[in-house]
Length: 264
Image (cartoon, rainbow, N blue to C red; front, side, top):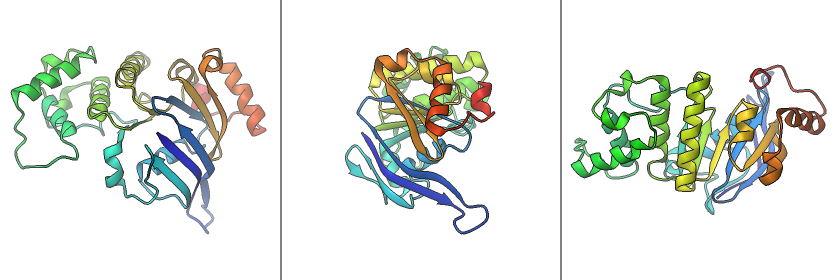
């Protein structure tokens, strides 16, 4: 479903601030894979997601989604294949619009646009059914302004909007990092339900090693712009946080930096 081959990306090339963010990165995801991504600060995790999404072009290498070469496709042309949720709960929704209006925008993404939103009763009923999976009671607040929701409610709604059209690939960029632990756990539970229900191929970046182990069928660790550890199946299920720390030291030749990964 996703194939990255020898991807490189350097920012500020030729200056004193030159930074190689991706260094010959290669990665393949099969359909239905739910891959958690960990690594220290500056490992290239978000840069990888941005390269896949087309936020910028890679300096070298190729990217394909569902067998389609998207290496030189601009971001807006890749959007039809992707769903994405960012760290900030406020970025994925329109605060001054109603819940049902936000869902209508998501449902009609890529379709013919008019000046009138015009939500039909059938659509409204479909949105209510979709909202039930969140178990937040939002199906009873369809006309509430999204700006009145809590951060966790907004992030759950953003997740639903990102998956409403069943994207070929779901990108989750630390989508629970800004939430308190209890709310983060709830959003992760919702994530698992939606991914399983719709059999979505998913890349999820997290700084929380326990979450990386507990969720998904596969885990990759990045360091200096490349994958240094890739584990799946039963081997992944048996992992402990201490195992990940040891693997990092073995693969990178150094200790994990004292950053948010360690604090989590």
